[in-house]
Image (cartoon, rainbow, N blue to C red; front, side, top):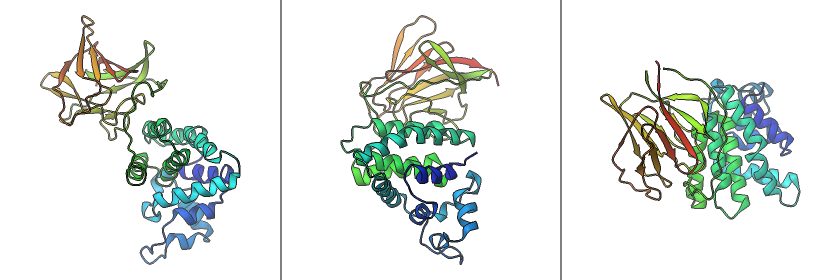
Length: 314
């Protein structure tokens, strides 16, 4: 069974024609660490390269071993393109790192109880973004792949990639409008009972798992790139990074928009009336007032993401 790191190196070798040493020489830092020399200078130490770098499990990762992913991703992408030596090589890179490589990395993250949803959402957002240059998308997809593989932390990978987009490409992980968004089909399962929880509804079918809503003061944040223990990112691509907050106040529960682009509506479970929690196209810094939600209601985020509100047991 691969680790995120070993899969990354294996893929760079099989798809990109880059050896483990070549990849490590770009990814590792040249800074001296605690008298052990610079990690980049140790790539000829077979045990170090194999055990501490290539085959490191998520619990064995040393973030300080790695250099600037902005630079290494650009260099490695260029090497892959050169090694492919094909017309439309950047398109092949983009296709690979938003397709088979992305799916395998997502599966490995889930295997190690890491946030595969977050990784998949970032890949879909990059792939569907309106950037005109295929080469830019290719670099971003490779950056997500490399940073996640090296650090086994998709949250850091998203932050790293997002900062590169802003600084170098003048782009952000902005929310796509519904016409650009394609629904994500989910198949999951499980649930619990006494508080409120949410379950995804896809084509009128409930798709597990059930997500318990947090009773903490902060509540639960729903969004494409929402992170943390009290977050839900099982959403389609037209949902904003942080789209909706749900919280408990006394004995009641409320939903509040977080300045989303494509808005949220509530369909009452009691009488099927529709309440607008946040209008489409608001994207305001001033959040709208919260709206009370109850068991049986349906929350509609953007064009295609639906959650059923239901009572669950502790």
